[in-house]
Image (cartoon, rainbow, N blue to C red; front, side, top):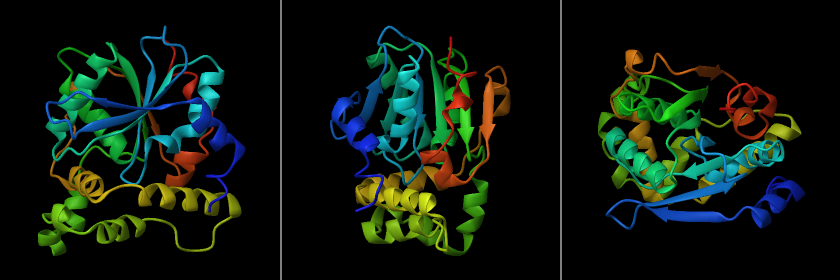
Length: 249
């Protein structure tokens, strides 16, 4: 078992911050899982959106640190959605359910793209106060090009068994020598990946590769912080000081 999963910090987080499950769609199989920590009086919290391989608890260090400073933080795990519009509509319903008019969004990789698409989706009635994008992208064409030689495979994510989908994701993880801290981070992310079901992985890979881009003129008035760092470092060891200029409102 990885050191992070049995660490005092992680166990303290899991014992003090409850995992909530919320249904906002007509389809009751679409369940949002989230950790909501910090003062409920804060109506413009920071919301974390994970990458393809992530679950809501990969942000536990950020949650513990930021709530200790008095911020409200929500970390999400999305239901199964197969296109960006469906995701944005579901996320809007979730914010309505939580009675949150505007939020700060932190997105890692796919989470960063979805954060931008939601800001674009709500540009006529803005719901996003600011964006923090960690190793994110604004155009999925690079993934379409990568999959050109295997286009039939791209359209078959929903048919592929879970072990094949996990193999695709694991191919992006570092396989060479790494320092102990990074090795622990990789072990933790692999463990979190193993907890995801076939439909969750298939839908996330579909969202990641589906042909789409962010229309820049629709999010130009939103403050954006861009972070380009090691993927696993961003998820688990990100210095929390980066957020102090972004989460107050």
